[in-house]
Image 1 (cartoon, rainbow, N blue to C red):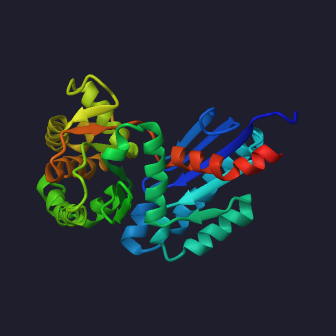
Image 2: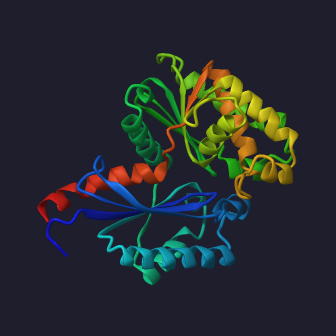
Image 3: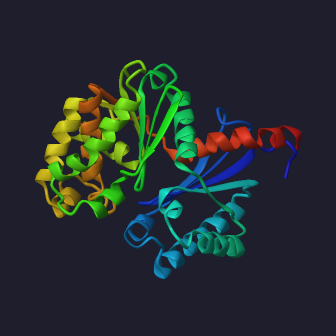
Length: 306
């Protein structure tokens, strides 16, 4: 290959509701372009939050996906790979066995990051994507196991992710989810009591993307990248009024989205209400884009000297 070929980086985000892969090339993040994206609907959080470990069946499914993506990395001649796991593997007793199995089979090392590091990566990509909005806003990433909040220099990781909530809250009524969420959100507000008031909510994650697109489809917003707190409340009412099959057919949601979007909608609605926020921005980025930016920053000395 030529000496001046742009560097290709592959990142993997191992979440609680799904795992995601992205390959991009460039000399830096700003000038990079995405070559391929993939997603596997593998819900690690179901096992992790119920039994405390990942079952053998799910472990094999995870390994199969990693083998497929390793072949993809070889095909695209990826020179740097970063795979990061969040809440589900953080909470799994057999995390070391899983990481070892993936490493010995594919050569890919899984890095299990804590909530603060996850929050930092997400905050950085939001500040980059929305430089005039995000620094003044309450930033929130809705994951399957945890929800990362950041405001100014403070980062908080709360155990209120959507898959975890589905497992913890027996009643699937809106008020049951709200009652579970309120103490966490009120404590968060008290932690930020002496900070400036956030001007808006900026959200990341698959559920936020789905909610922003749903708001547009239901004519509650003219944009697919932002919506009002009123729209958030209206969507919550609409979602809970439909059963699972109706959410699939009438709202055109994926099967692995149609259940977790219930607690996610409550979370957005309650956060707006408690923090008195009227706008929700959804810049359509998430942890994998943050990992890509972080990876270009980390590997740039190697890139420039190669």
